Image 1 (cartoon, helix red, strand yellow):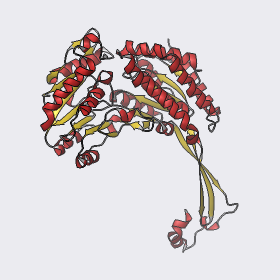
Image 2 (cartoon, rainbow, N blue to C red):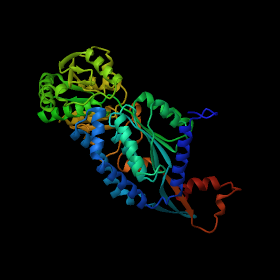
Image 3 (tube, one colour):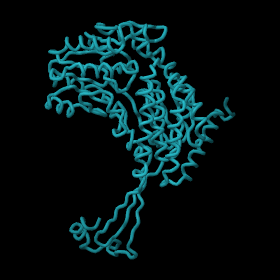
Image 4 (cartoon, rainbow, N blue to C red):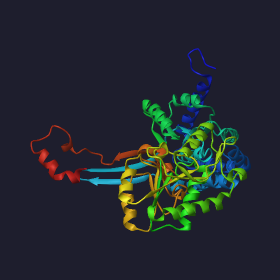
Length: 470
């Protein structure tokens, strides 16, 4: 429904609630962390008391097993809440500095201030974790939030809206469900900060909308995360880590190893070991046994099925169109200029490509967009240093995948085409607040030399005494 002015009733209601959120933040004591900790505790209780219902929703949306859903969604959120509660007092404490210079004395205090009302737009691949992880940081920093979950994970979006409504006042947290038209309407409101996780295409739209209103924004996008395995470090443990990281959540992870580049001398061995590892993880008939999750929506499923045609299926490759499932698949002999070489896969297909010269491989990877993370498995210190120096990415992970992004001690974010801005742990507190400088001049008199009119020799004196003046 719209008003005569062409503005939807929903937008008017959202605007009213947004103003209440801004007022709440403005009236709060920004130095008092008690209320923030209480809100984090309420969020923790919400997750724990409704675990079964949340796991069921995640299964309905993405076919996640309870174990995978708990570890990749709920557990990391609970860890983040615990981390924030432990660190919040120390982080929020103002920092003080005194300055004593020639003819001046001052004191400066640096305070963390919340922005106000924050819009969080979350994706479908981790519909609970990626909706609430930024919210944890935003609440800890003293803000209020609107959450716009993805319509492609409808069950999780529905339960999230129900629980937030039951546990929180709208002036603290609000969930708005709907399709892309709802997101477009939300982007027209005067937010104090926008946090977006999703595709580069939609991220560009969000960034443009924020720029029109000078709204600070964080974009968490994706990219083709390369994974290099050289001849010095092929073990069963290495292959196990890569296979697990690639096929977690049916390959729908922005930090999954997108394509693995294996040194030619160990290429056949890697393929054989990867096949055995897939069998151990998912059995001989993963589609029948439902040991692998499913694509979130039809368009994504069709994209993955098309990718299967762009090389030789070394292992796997079967599809279940009814349930939008695809077997964990190893793809070799990729056709030159195939889209799978340049587009983020975001599904259970692992291209395995041999290389002979590391320098040549790195030069090829440098021509691609910057990814969220570069993975390398090696024991060669020179090779490790070379890859780390030459390739730009949001993170660099040596001899492991995924785990760098699940610890609250590590910040998370991209660079270039994979996004900008960082969060998780202390980085979230910095991101969702602005630092206010409070300056106090302590001398009761003025140094007249700093005021005009200036004398003929004043410039020479300024040059001589500059370092003691400022």
